[in-house]
Length: 121
Image (cartoon, rainbow, N blue to C red; front, side, top):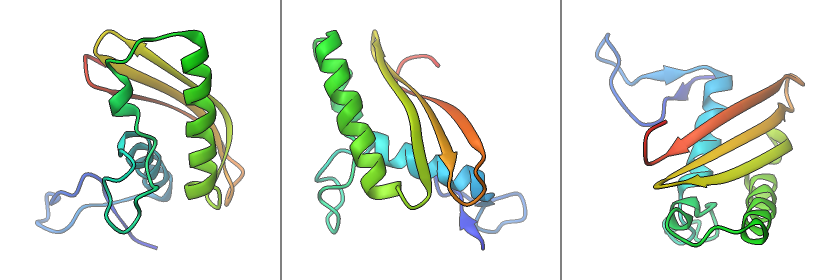
């Protein structure tokens, strides 16, 4: 199956860039995490809303609540593709760092991704 790469761009051949299954899953995770609920017209519940959390006060309780909410959202929207093993969200100045460990359901492969939005990676 062919997957269009995210963000959309044209490759060196002048065609729509595509990506592997593994990178497609990573792209879907990133889209979920950094999309705000209500941003997608036909899927108003889609999104982890992490971008809104960058400048909010940080506390262990808030971080724990956020991690549970994001994990539940990942299960809802991507549960057929991945099984979340662990999730850690931290705010570092003007950046959010998400460390996610998950198993790809199709292959059983366990992967760990670190996604950073804003600031310097």
